[in-house]
Length: 100
Image 1 (cartoon, rainbow, N blue to C red):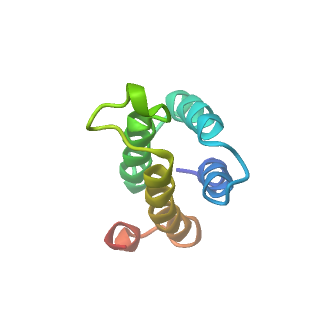
Image 2 (image 1 turned 90 degrees about the vertical axis):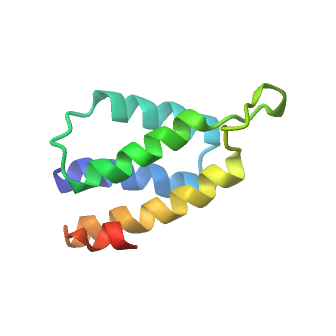
C-alpha cells in the first residue's frame, strides 16, 4: 500500500480517536474509503480489515444493538490500538506492526 493511501486512513482514524469527528462520521467515511480501495493484500490490509469489522459492529443506539455490537467507547479503544500499528507501517513497513 502506498504511503499516501495509508496516510488517508491514519488521518481519519486519528481524527476519530482525538474526538475531532463523531463516530457516525468516522463510520461513514471509513466504509467509503475501505470499499473503494484497491487492496494489494499487503500486511496493512489485515489491520484495515479488522477496523472494517469493528466499524461494521459499531452500534450507537443501545436499543438496537446486538450482543456482538460495540459502542463508541470500544470502537475508539480499538482504533487507538490500530492507529499505533498503522503508524509503524507508515514509517517502516515491517511485520513488527502486527506484533504490537
